[in-house]
Image (cartoon, rainbow, N blue to C red):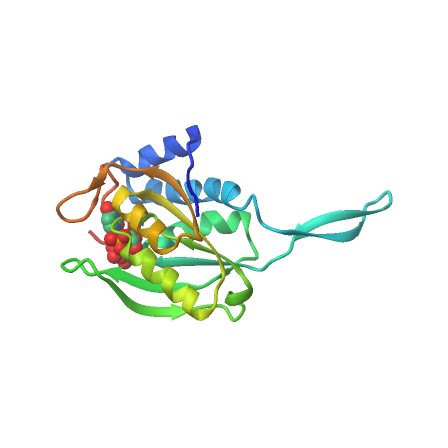
Length: 207
Ligand SMILES: O=P(O)(O)OC[C@H]1O[C@H](OP(=O)(O)OP(=O)(O)O)[C@H](O)[C@@H]1O
Ligand SMILES: O=c1cc[nH]c(=O)[nH]1
Ligand SMILES: [Mg+2]
């Protein structure tokens, strides 16, 4: 398992939009999707390829295409905010929805919905969620997918707390994590600081 913190000027710039409490819903959604798209370019660099025969206007040749079905699993709700940006680069990916929210008092993950594509087990799965705080929601999701038989999983998050990342790497040492920023920690309400606040509320305008 490896943690890749993706440092890039375009990601930093758009992350600044996400962190700014004055950013409106439109810019927040756009910036989140754009960061997710930039991250997926890096996170897909080890995807397996297969050779196929292709005829160019000049002659027959061998070209390479992706060899594995791809499934994106957004953790509802906030994970949905990254999906459009990723689908721009992986337009044939299937999307499996997993509904999990964090109980605000106990901080335990609470499951409420799942709908996976039929070939999820054979897929390369990318689990996406902007926030990795205590790690509870992500660990629950990885447990759920592995229990279903999924073997190849990569995680994409925007901001993580060191505590949650540590727990995640201990519980799922075989899963790579791509993340745009590792922040300073969790405050008394288990919100990431400096963070960006509640990602779901900022995407959907619910607060
Ligand atoms: O690492 P954790 O401590 O589990 O916290 C992270 C989770 O909290 C947020 O979701 P939330 O529970 O707010 O649900 P929402 O997306 O519906 O707002 C976030 O999008 C993660 O799923
Ligand atoms: O900082 C945090 C922690 C959990 N969920 C969020 O949306 N933000
Ligand atoms: Mg939320």
